[in-house]
Image 1: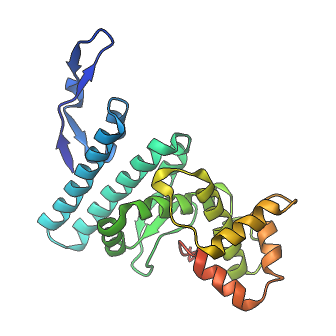
Image 2: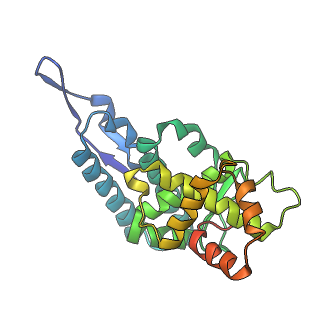
Length: 232
């Protein structure tokens, strides 16, 4: 998806100039312009990019090949939004390669790829694109924290919950506008306990606590913190 843009930059001496080499810019690479525009203009540009991605999808039919192309455009859009808030994650965001997996309803990662179902990706993008920002970052943080590789002999289900809790705790404590979500009472209670823990925070610490917790509470925590699938 390509958008033609006329970029006018105000200079310190009061004059202005256009950026000719940025006349044509991929919607998926809007970060090149963000240094020149204010927040309102940024939001307008992002909304325009989102609408163009969806218009492209509607105008080119719903065949599998084009659905995958649009999904990849959405991934680029997500990475750009996250990049503007978390610039130090730039390398991490570019490491995971998008791969289609029709058997899942959310995202999943094996540390090399980010797996997704195109229909789910496009459906969520239409309703709430900000949720995809958080979902993608959730999977990236699993990799950064090495959750995929340090489980050892721990119970897979309980370990997955522990990892989800620590990742969601990290995201909620970033306090970034694009990542904000209402906190449930259960979530706030869990975060208070984490903050009070003298052993510090890690998936391993939370796992030990979960192993001493009754099954009903464990299942409630699973439902509360479930974000991506750990299939891969």
